[in-house]
Image (tube, rainbow, N blue to C red):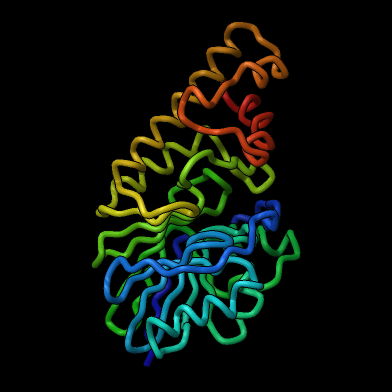
Length: 277
C-alpha cells in the first residue's frame, strides 16, 4: 500500500497570482544528473525536476512544461520501472507545474495552499488536489520527503522540499543560479524573501537543487541571500538620497553584485523599489 501523510496546519489563504509560463525558454533536450542511487535531477527546458525512486513508485518535485512530460517519463523509466505516483510542486509557475496537466491523470499532486489559489485564479490546469499550509511529509516505500513553507519570496506559495536521508534541499525558484524574479503579481516579496530563505537554511542539508541551474551547496545559498540583501540595501540608499523611483531604477546596477539584468528582473524592479524603505 502507498502511504501518504499530509499535515495541514492552517486553512487556505486565497491570494491571487500570475500564471507565468516562461515559454521563451528553449525546449532543450532533458538530461539526468545522479545525486544518489534513488535521487536524480532532470534538467533542461523548464525548472529542475527532482526524482525520488522507491519500490512503490516515484515522487517528482516539479514537472516542467506539459510538452516535456513524455521525455520526463522516459527519463524516469531509465531510472526505475515503477510509475510516477506523486508530484510536489514548489510554486505555481508554468515551467514548474505545466506537466500537471497530463500527470494529474495518473499521479497525485501536492502543493502549498497558495499554489492552488494562484493556479485557480490564473485558470491553470492541473491544480493540486492536496494542499498544506506550513509543512507536509510524504512517505512512500519507506522513503520520505518534507515540504516546508517559510513565507513569501519569489511568490506567496513557494515551498522548499527536503530529502532528509540525502541531506538535499530543492528550493524551487526561491534560489536560482543568477538573478531572481520577484513575482509581485503572484504575491512575492523582496523584503520577506531573505528571511524565508534564512529559515530554510536552518534545515539539515548539504546540497541544493535550485529552481534553475546546476546543483549547488548550502554555502552557495547563504552567499546568494547575502547578495540579495546588498541589492536591497543599495535600493534603500538610493531612495534615502531622495531619488525618484524612475531614477533609482536607472541607477541600480545589479552587475556590481554579480547578477545580470534580465526581462523578469526588470519586471519586478518597480515593486522592489516601492517595497524597500
